[in-house]
Image (cartoon, rainbow, N blue to C red; front, side, top):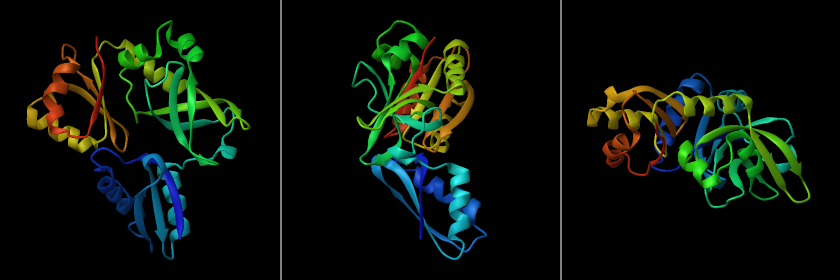
Length: 242
């Protein structure tokens, strides 16, 4: 049996498991392999593969979805990782990101306050979180800037690509919604049900259970949250408002 912990989490309404099964059928359908999905530490998804083609299937899964680093000793300074915001706003000295470190014990990495202030200006972390629409589980691409193996501390910065994306989100004049905890298909259903599909300029899948809605000019994020929120139980909303 081969096991791969992929760079996706399932939480909230857990609809991500069904979506992932569909993706795996498409990816592995012609191979001699069976798979089982489970949530592991902090909701990361583990895919267990067994059968004649388990080796090639594991490689295809890694290629398609990526794989967590597992251990602190695998984390390298200067390398780019895909992680998720976690415990946002609980501390004032930065923002924590879970990049999938399980050993020697589960450990989140920190985007420190001095970096955030240097990048986005002098404001408290909690204000940034609120104004930038950041929510727990939002996927972010980060670069490791420092690892202290003795203290088991990891410091991060946003990757250049992620930084560019954040700055675009903050400067284009369109209200935006980040929706975590449900799949994009359910978000789309809620928009259609409430008649608000026409208010969305663009929908983007940021991850298996994370969606970005870019709203049309003049459409305000709070109104859309109020309309579609009751149809998306278990989902969490973040908003950029202009």
